[in-house]
Each structure stands twice: as C-alpha cells, then as structure tokens.
Length: 223
Image (cartoon, rainbow, N blue to C red; front, side, top):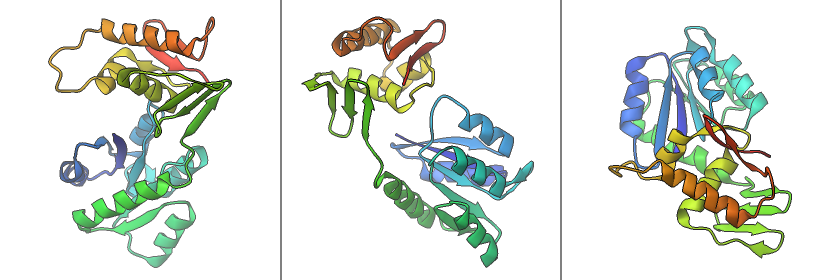
C-alpha cells in the first residue's frame, strides 16, 4: 500500500484527487496547510509520495519542500497555478520530482505519480541490516547471521511494518488494521500479541531486543 500526502488548500480539488486516484494500492492523507502537513509528516508512518501546492494559507510550499528534502527522501510533485518558468525551475532545484500546473488532467497526474513512485524505488536499498539480522522483504528473506528464518505471511508483514517504520511507535490498532484485511468482520485483538510472541521466538532475540513493547501504546523496532 502506497501512502500519499496531499497538501492542497482547495477542499474540492484535494478530495477530487483522492476520489479519482483511490485504488487498492493507494491510501491518502489530506491536509490544507503547512501546519497540517507538518503534523502528518511527524506521525508514526512515512509517506511514499507528497503532492504539494505552493500557495498555502499559512506560508509558501517552497518552504515546506525545503523542510521535506532536508529531513527525508520522499518524492514530491508540485501542483500549482503558478505557471512561470522561474517558479518551475525553483521547485525542481529545491528537489521536487515533478511540477504540474493547474488545471491538469487526472489521467496525466496518475501517470506522473506512477512514474515518480517507480523512480523512487530505483537505487533504493531494500535490504535492512541490524547487527546479526539481514532482511530483504522483496525476496521475503529473513536471516540472522547466515541462518535463514522462516516466517509466516502474517509474521513477515508485521516485521516489515515495524522495520520500515523503525524507531516509530506503531499502535496496536494501527498494526491490526494494516496486517489483517479490512473486510474481516472481526479480528481478535489477542491475535496481534500471539503474532508478536511468535516473531520474537523465531528471531531468537535475547533480553530486550529490537522488537520492543511500548506499554499502553503498541510496538516499536529499535534500530
């Protein structure tokens, strides 16, 4: 599931983009201001792509773009009514992957999003190493030293969520929602505890390892 942040002060446009592009492998978070975007970016999970307007009620999208690029590598596509060449050059120089002027075709926007996500994956290391552990989720391979650890599909999904959000606390509710399908009528909350315990057992972590419980909140993978 690709998470996309839309930072756009026009309510109709941001909701229209979400409605038009909503599909099985996309989820959206909508913001109307820089302050709202900062809160979203400071949350528990990272974004795969950001759609950013330049003219926002509490400041310039350029300033937010600089912040985003100074802290992370999320691809950014600028959506703006500013059609001057110097504005486009500035946006690209600050690190935006693409610059689209309004009005635009939703079909073109979808194609640009797909291209940005595809390019973001090129050269990106999909192998995670933590001490004796080596994880390659694309290959569905989990190793401790040279020993391969066989995990169930659910255990692997849990491990991937925690590792890809390392050092961020993921709540029990969030994990249950992401691991078990949304169309499940009922998921026993105890299922998460059982899966965590089985994962810890298979990883053979001694004492307080990487997979830590944050009592009253959820779990975190400490890197």
